Image (cartoon, rainbow, N blue to C red; front, side, top):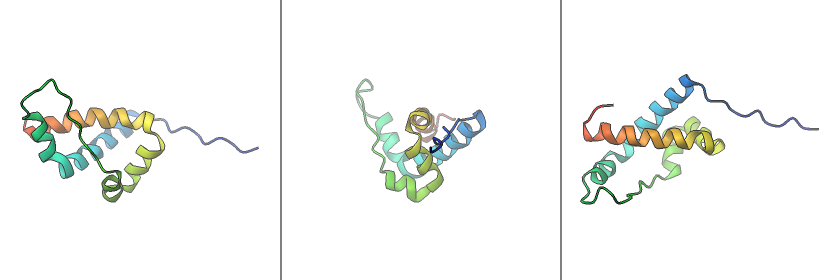
Length: 94
């Protein structure tokens, strides 16, 4: 009988490290798009931020693997980091 894969548990330190890595990726690859969303005419509309997974993989393979293998745990961190990065790209601070 095979042992099931142990589930990855996110520590506060790990979440912080991953959040920093996500933020660097977003600002490096998508800051102009995030700024244009912030400056859009209707702040109540939903404006998607399209991210190519290949870009994430190219930028940080370890991060891409974690995101792919544990989306339920890492997508919320990625989502929160998008908001933080959006504020940083607008110049409102972290």
